[in-house]
Length: 372
Image 1 (cartoon, helix red, strand yellow):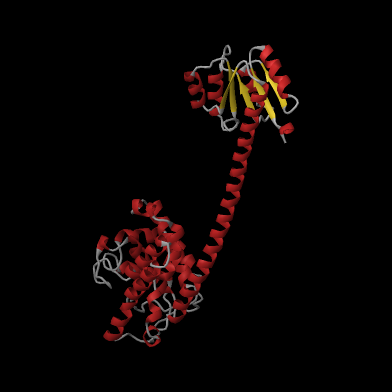
Image 2 (cartoon, helix red, strand yellow):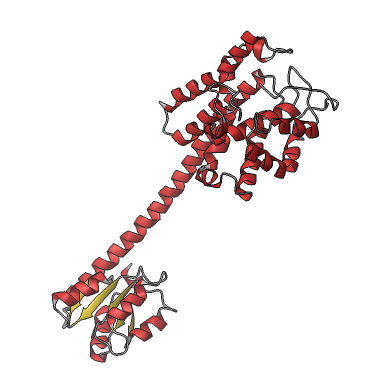
């Protein structure tokens, strides 16, 4: 192994340089140079494993040379041993602070010199091996994280699909909701709407967590969920509890997992997506900016998809009419600023709505209250 190692020896004293070469050449591939400038030129062509560097040299001394080496991403990892006649502690400390791994004093003793070099090469080799192992471990952790994430998403999709199938929603509702949210967030970013809060969101957690916004509907009777007509007052009160049931279920999940960011977003989606800007929503009757922004954007996405999709209680609306109904909710159901964002991304909403399998649309003039 040592025979493959390349060592650059730098000394302006040719006698010292000759002595170093003779000691090292039986074990290493040696490149003797008489100045630091020549060393830097040589490094463009030779990948050195270690540098023996004299301190007192004209033009560019050893301390200046090591400063150049350590400032270069190509050379900073090469171990440097100072070989010098300067034997006081201050000089040694200065060299070590600049990045030297060792100090060898002239006149040097061959066996000691070789042992010091062997030690530093072994340490450098171990460092490279640790870096390699760390890289391997990191790659395995990424793969494991991806596997866990895939399993997590699969379970999430199954749970969300169960909710969707019981709700009488058309296929793909949950996927479309996630896409609507992404559009709104893009629009908010480009229009500088609530920028500080949007920039604080982790979209890798926020967007998938939206799939749990109606989780509480699992506990609502099919008779109420899929009733073809208008709900009675008593039935509607039961329906409203799906928000708090969803929040309670997610709170129970939080006790058994470390994935708090994901569940924090999911909890807000579940609890706030039926709040209304004017305070007439539920479950807490929040109004205006007191409604979490996550809940306000979910309200828009959820209502729009409910309008353009077929449900047990209605046929789908044309997208243009759905947009008109959305605007009737300005300052009542919806945050006015978010409706402006909705206008900017309306064409993208239309493209997403086309993914719905619904094949019919209600005639213009039909009326439907905003989704409950």
